[in-house]
Amino acid sequence: MTVIVIRNSSAGNFTLYASSECKKRLIPMPHPAVVTIHRDLAYADGVAMQKDLVTRIANDPDCPGALVFAEHKPVITCGRSGDGSNLLVRPDELAADGLEYHQTNRGGDVTYHGPGQWTVYPIQRLAWYDKNLHHYLRLLEECVIHFLQRYGLEGTRRQGLTGAWVGTGKVAAVGVAVSRWVTWHGIAVNINPDLSRFTRYMHPCGIRSSEGGVASLSSLLGKPYTMEETLNPLMESMAAVLSLELTVHNT
Image 1: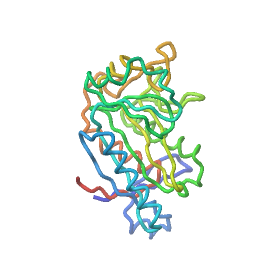
Image 2: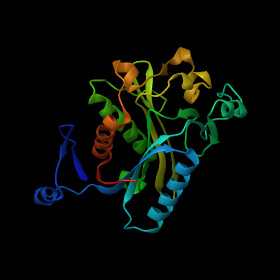
Image 3: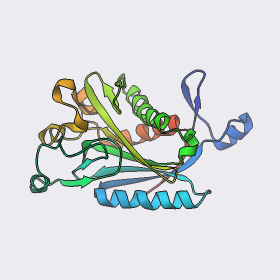
């Protein structure tokens, strides 16, 4: 399956075109990216996969980008901004409770990944986005905001913070790294995870309960959404906002 999505910036709308139609209309072709989908993925395996993709894309100017959709095994990760102070238990206590702990080189502080959450890793050339990391981060947030609109939810940003919110609930975390002008890491979108794991073990992303909480698509709408039914809407939103032509590979 190939999806081509073009953004009509003047109207703010998103339109689907076939490649032949793009040529006919003289519309610039979107950036090619290969999608893979991984369920029950160990975090370390996801990192190794990303590193391999970064190397391949950086070394080969003709290599398409990648969009990795992962549902991870339960894990807590701490990014470059974290010093461990927002973790409320010791790593060995996490292991006893069935969670791994990883220090990672993405931006941001401590957060949780696990079942019921899509973690999406766009492995893209930052040159596609004018080599502007701040702009790229805002685009990732816009991907989630666009996705939430499909369900009648108004996603927002918060001044000085990354991520996407609905009211006081943070629905998605954003944290990236860049190597050789190729992006990796990405966004974590809460579909229907165990939200207690965000507060039982940490101050998620360094945010205290008085500043807001963590929400999911299911908690906001009162319906247990599945990973399967949200995959294509999220994929299409990311293609639209990031201007990607997606080819989906089954894994």
